[in-house]
Image (tube, rainbow, N blue to C red; front, side, top):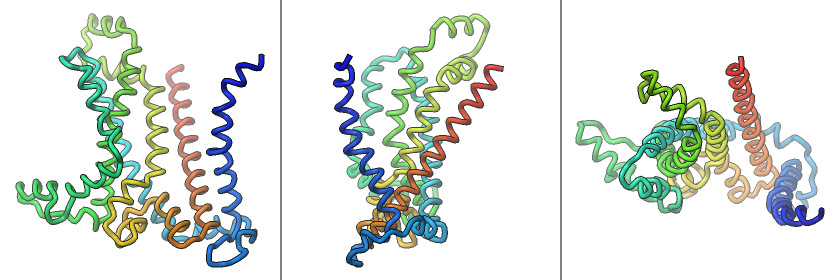
Length: 295
């Protein structure tokens, strides 16, 4: 009777030490006025004052807006491309095993290496993207200076890295769909596109929900790409006008840039609560859809 608990105990111990305890301790710190330049402030209890400051903090609102904007630009194309790529890989192709391995290569590449390469591609003066635009008579774009342009560049990096990963998840789900459904649809005269819309997508709905939730969490925690994309002296600033500073960058800058530990912890916990809220909305929407289908 005891042995099953012993088998799963290591996971819960590791989670408690490296997951639960830091989360709870950060929540405690977020209710203090702890600052490195104020001795003894680690015991200064301020309650919810740090969270009230967040509501009036324009930099926090800017970071939240940037995070949501980059997240939408990265998540929607990423999942659509992944679904289409998985549909293609599900057909009988020559060397399809090699192709399936190939789509995963961007995901196993270091985020630092990938971002630095894309920084060169999106360079203002000598970048390949601007050179290509010049071939069509278009003006060069300072990708790091503008809000929408920097969002697009960072979203491109994220999409390139994670499309193949999600495609393999979709592919695994597609292979569990009974082939008899496609045969019956083909006998009824349904085209490949109609089969994809009427059979594949509905059968993949739980998997699609999973990838939406995971991609949303990843987008809201975006850190490495915007940090390395910045060419400013302070890489956590997210550009000269904070035009692509995300919540993770803003929390990091409060912790290690200004050493406002209490306020930085409040930013981190606010980010956690936003993630929980968005995931809850996704789950509620999924339940509504299942209810409609059942009717």
